[in-house]
Image (cartoon, rainbow, N blue to C red; front, side, top):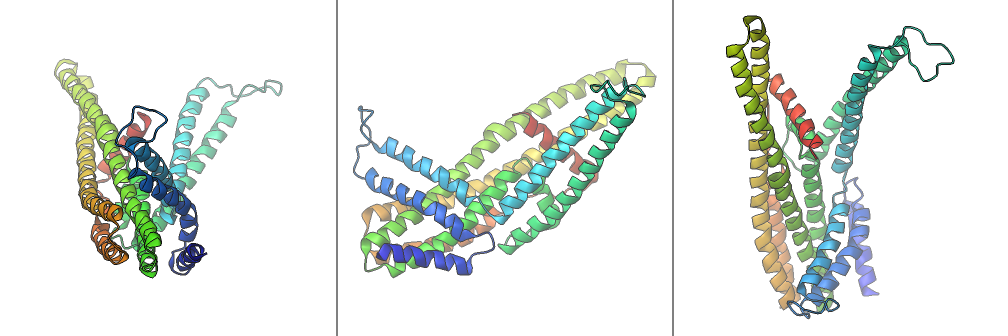
Amino acid sequence: MRTYFCVLVFVFCFASTAPASSLEDVWGEVHPLLSDAVSELDLRGNVPDSSWNPLEKDKESVDGKINDLLDECIEVLGISGMSETKDAIRKLQEDSKHCRERVAELKTERLAAPKKVENWEVWKKDAASIDEEIKDLEIREEENERRVESLIDKLLEEMRAIGMKVDREQVETLVYSVTGDDDVRLVSVFNNVKLITAELQRLTSEANENIEMAKRYYGMHTLLLRILINLYDTYERRINDVYLVKIADIISKQEELIQRTIEKINSEPAKYRGIYKTNLAAQGLTVRTARKYAQYLGKNRKRIADARSGIYHEYEVALNTYETVQGAHNLIIMMRDANAMLDRISELQTPDLIVFQNTEMKTEFRKLTNRLNSLD
């Protein structure tokens, strides 16, 4: 009965202090997952390090179960106004890409389209109907762009509302970055973890005469730190193993193309050299933008590595304290210190965003993002 009362108090606090993203709903989904994970954490201390028997639990199998539960928590904690806005932007961008691809197909079809089609030839399109479809798709893409611009303003407001110091151009870079979804998800999870940790600290303090309850709340706090570590690990792996690999491949191919283009400039007839020189300039812009893109991702990777390092040490001491259970008073002090640490690391959640000096490079950045996304 007492546990049920504390959970109700927790939900009530969220209802009165949470932003419009309905954090009480997030907690309602996360709480049972964290509870199961804490039960597994308790079990972990009573199983062998390893076992030859596949039916017997050991630390590795328990850790696997915990990570599965925490992965589910990440999906829930990633829900926020920011993530919903970014998702809406992504869907509009995907629809615009579809519009452009369809327009390209229709323009090819139009080359051989008849001026008139008989009524019974329902499988054919005349030039006028194709032109009309192209116009509709171009209007749709323009409308998508207007809606994206409006949503970027909304995303800017939502980020500033949680204390992020960003301007519109930085948010625009985030929107068109290949890691944009990852960055918004990371910020959303971190912000929700901060809010939940603050409430867990209060509940632990209230439960100081019930060490088992205090221990359970502290176990949830410990696993929230582990969620951040897992999330940061995933972010680093994606940058290292996916995005930077793709960018290196793009640069390598462009550099080979540049060498061939230079050879053409020196060997082809003079009337073609102007075209080759124009191509060479475009190829050079792609390489410069790709290198800037790689630097941008490298800075974000370092930012995340620094945040992970700070949280990892906090997690290790939290886990050790949880397993020792020295007393509710010590747990409360540890959680207070953890809150201070999360406040210090908050600034590291802001992506290191590019401010472009010219329109051409900004356009090329967006093109590279589309190429990186299409290489999956």
